[in-house]
Image (cartoon, rainbow, N blue to C red; front, top):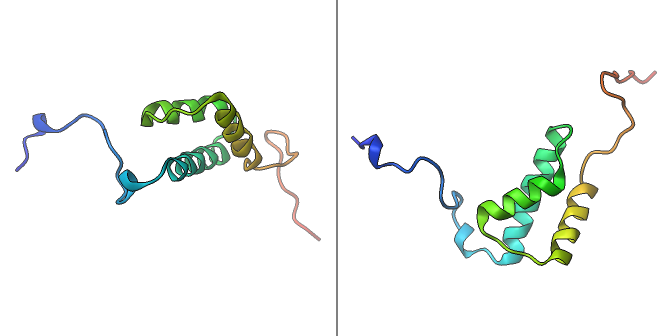
Length: 93
């Protein structure tokens, strides 16, 4: 039996096998994928703030130009639509 007091209170490293071997480009793609997924499933998420948070959590540093490019790419993948909040989809005829 493991003593609960010896466990770390939060994750401090990658969970997936191979994550430590990933290149910077692969790590950034993984973070971008996470941000896009979360933005797609949560209305009102600020992609720029979320991306900055993910980069800070992982300790990855990118220059301003790269960050801006990632934000544009993350926003491009966000779902598009013109439905207003509370609107319903109409069934096709």
